[in-house]
Length: 163
Image 1 (tube, helix red, strand yellow):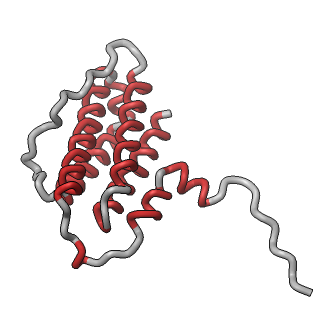
Image 2 (cartoon, one colour):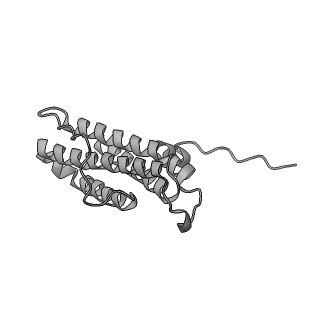
Image 3 (tube, rainbow, N blue to C red):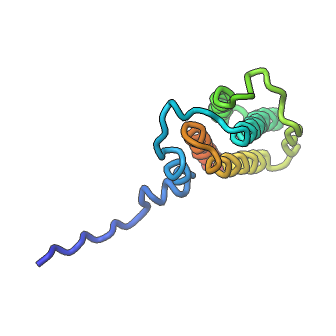
């Protein structure tokens, strides 16, 4: 007689956690192999990656605007702002046509609402950027896809911390 399968665990599974944080996109596209030899970037990939640099620049600007609008919030999220800046540096390094001296995003960052829900506004900015990185991840290959998936997951963590 064959043994019966073990019952499915109840609760929050690792798979659900990965799906919730955008890690599933990372697993599906960013970790599919690849080697250092396939680091060539198509024009479309390069353009899209440059666009993601602008998205991350907007996140960094949003953290600065939120800190200017609410000093207490700025102190609370200083580590998250630093992480967003480090993510921007890694993204700039990966983008073939974008260096550290790149021009700022084509549209200026929106200002945080004066006297309004600055935390909620910042959370919305971070969530939008996480979604943009996750969407762009599927159109990249190899390490660039992994980087964008990682940025998306990291920003989902920021979004949760801002809740």
